[in-house]
Image (cartoon, rainbow, N blue to C red; front, side, top):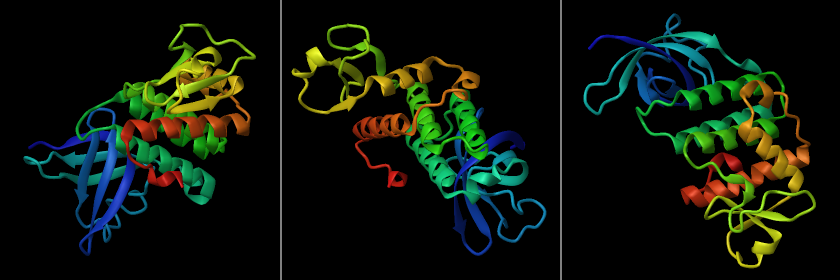
Length: 245
């Protein structure tokens, strides 16, 4: 098989034997890929200081045979996003984004939108943006790309548009808003949501990434948004997100 070349963000690394590494990365044209990097722990030329979680790489690879692993032959560092690994809160946010990507994607299922959101996230974290806000915005946009975007513009039960001064909740089981009038009918799996936080999420859903970088929610709003999205995602996956803790 002929060799290929792609860009990829490293999501996970594990040691394999004495000298090799297993690398999971996300690529715009390959999707999520797991590859073996032979001799990665000893190589000073092909992989030194390159195979690090959250690094953006130019990757040279040989496709897998059958159901085996891709063979990662060489990597060129495009961006190490070093500040992420030197600031604990940024690193935790990147771990959360990486785990969500692993949960919501499949092997060899390309999605350029998810790759673009991942790159945006690492750039924002490396630049010192509030990790709570970055994590919340990534989470929201990933849900949209994966087909699970919550409906946030109106009550999903009566159809009334969102109005200031009203109480709302997200119905975790259906991914819709419930207004105060309809909340009494929705006793289970409802997550209260302040209007200010709801407005932030609405803007984040419809903004392009350049304008999303300019959105500056309060830490309370960012924290509430992240909490709501986390609870909604737990319901979707029926599984804990380990990096949440």
